[in-house]
Image (cartoon, rainbow, N blue to C red; front, side, top):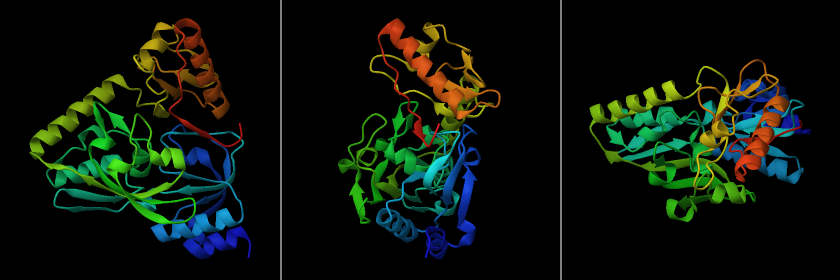
Length: 301
């Protein structure tokens, strides 16, 4: 049995796509075709897929909604496993929210609000899924996933399922044990606090207003492009280097917020990559600080 047949047997023909353009699955809206693009619906299916890929030594990459991902124009040789809409169940019991890896942070925050629970407001506008947010300890406006995480179910490279309490996740700035060991986050439990729904809603609206006025939401991007260097702000360093509006092909340093690289006009992945590298070089030249991309890069450029 070939790989295609094996994948279809596990998750059904409709959930296995061949030569799927990754521009349809990244918020940058760029990226060539993945050899296979699969959309499992259950934790056990992910486990079976990984087992086969390991046995056959086939490269794979796990993504959510592609909000922090740059895929090369020539695509990805291997299997892209998407944990997104088909693995996005959310359940609330008292003050604990259980959610699968593909649940959007905005949906989890809305569900928390509906159950009068506070703690997820900071994440209500982060355009990512729970799995990626746990893996990189996503944060915004002073909040981080480590403040609300209780535990996570992950799949090890050896195909073992394990539940890890938050205190063992090594949660740091944009990092966790999962970003280091390559384990796949399948679901997580978040422990929130009872709160006043009007207050929670008002704070979410306040953060939304900040994002709309300060971020270039009208263009495809991957959010903040660079990690925050210690003691600095990436956006300010870029602005002070005179790179506001700097453009390579169709990619541009946003004029609204220099921390964002945007797909302004039919950019290619190569345009975006070149822009990111040139910005890092110019900032280092001027300030001696090397900006490190927050955006993950896969595939052939």
